[in-house]
Each structure stands twice: as C-alpha cells, then as structure tokens.
Amino acid sequence: MRFVAPGRTAIEPIVFARPPLSLWAEFFDLLCGPEWPSVGALNERAAIACESVPGRDAGASGDIAGGMQPRFVVQSAELLRDGLHYEQRIADRNRIATRECNWHDLLNALVWLRFPALKSALNARQVAEIAVAGPKQRTLAQCALTHFDEAGVIVIVRDPALLVAWDAHDWHGLFWRERAAWWDGRIEAIVFGHALLEHALKAEQLLVGKAVAVAMRQSGETQDATWDGRSVPAAVAGAVRSSHLLLDPQELRPLPLSGIPGWHPANRVESFYRDAPCFRPLRSGRCYPAPLPPA
Image 1 (spheres, rainbow, N blue to C red):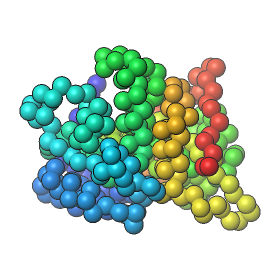
Image 2: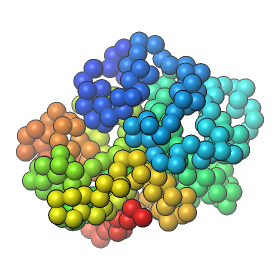
Image 3: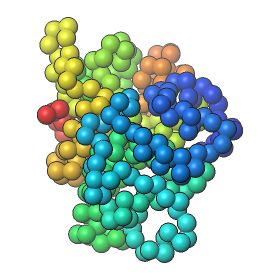
Image 4: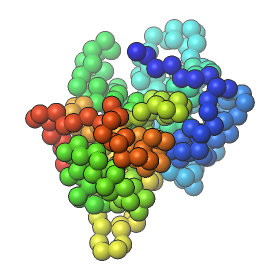
C-alpha cells in the first residue's frame, strides 16, 4: 500500500520532538511553519548553505553540475516537456524537479541541502547506469542506489560486538541489552533517506532503514574524533561515486530505526523487541558485506 503522509496541519508535534526529525532542527522553519515553503525559499536556503550548517557533509559545495549549488525548480508540465529523465536533468542542467506542497519532495530538498556531495554521487551513478541500460531498464546498481536514496541510513559502528549482533539480527541484543551504546557513542545512525523522513511524519510508524555500516576506530576511552556526522557522509559519497559501494541492494543491511532508544514510544518496554513486526529474523543464507572503512 502506498504511504500517504498526513496533511501539514494534521501532524502531531511529537514527531518533530524525537528522532529522526528532531535531528533536522536547522530546517524547522521549513518543516513546522504554517505554510508550505516555496521552491524559491528552498533556493534561498541553498544559496546560504555553508560548512557550518550542522551535519552538512564535508566538501559539499561545488560538487554537482559544473560546480554549482543545486537549483530546485517547480515540477510542471512545461518543465517535463524537455523530455529529460529526472536524474539526467539534474546532471545536465542542475535542475531538481520539485513538486510544490509535497512532503516527499520537500524532504528530498532538505537532504540535498544537508548532504549535497552524497546526493550528487548518487545522481552521477544513476546517470552512468542510465547511459548503459537505457531510461526504461533498471540495473541492480540502480536499485541499490534508489533504495539508499529513499531509505538510506549511515551507521557509524565503534564497537565490533554491536556489528556482530546486528549481522545476526539479534535485535534484542542490539537495541535492549546494549541500549547504552546508542547513548554513549558506540553506535550512531545518520538518517539520509527522504522517504524514511516522510514516514516519520506519522507518530506510530515503524521505521526500517537500509543501512551502510561504517567501522570506526576506538582506543580505550577515546574515540576517533576525526570521523563524525560531517565527514563520514563525505567518505560514503566518495565510495559511491567511485563505484565501490551500492552495486547491489543486498549490500544494504536492514536497520529497524524504531528500535533505537527514544525513536519510538513503544520501545521503552522489552516486549516491543519481541512483538513488533519490524524485527525480522535473519533469512537463511543471508550475509552482509564488511563495513566500509572511514578512509
């Protein structure tokens, strides 16, 4: 069944007070205002975006279409008469077709504003795949790229034991027994997919992301501070652009985001990890690739 986001005035305030949407607070004027932001307002925000914006990926500016910032344009019949594929229009003309008064496209625009280098890398790969397979066929790589674009999560793992639990789909261990790990920095989730953010607009929605794991160094009580929510997405962008990542959807690990402490109201009780349908067992024969090293 196709997901239908709630109307702008029907959204419960709690969804903006907890992750993942609470982690996008720099855009609350666009998300929570009484009126839909115009495409012009999105372009104004793009023009002033800079490295100091929290969470913005390193090396972001000048990383798409001739070194220009992305430009959002209203998706209209006139625009679509150019006959270009959505991805090709971005690559060739730096124009991101955006539907007005639409949550999916607004959230996509915000991801472009925060993570332009990674969005650009996905676009470059999509265009390269289209050139090979044509606009009406989809390769495995295109499926992987799309899955990550829509539902992607970057997970920084600083404790190898947590990766073992995750790979085994030991959800009780990952989220309940190791509950403190989500607070003390041993594991961290950075939501990238705009469809995930859209689903989060419904307060009780169970969220499951398609994740890329990044292994980080940890020495004693000190963690490698060089790699964080800014630089890790840039490293993922480099791996995507160089075709070292997202060649097949099977590379992506499912991560039930609703299991992260504080991300869903029901996960305060242990039985949630037994009963909620988002916690699925590991399929026989399923295995995951090694995590991406940060450098």
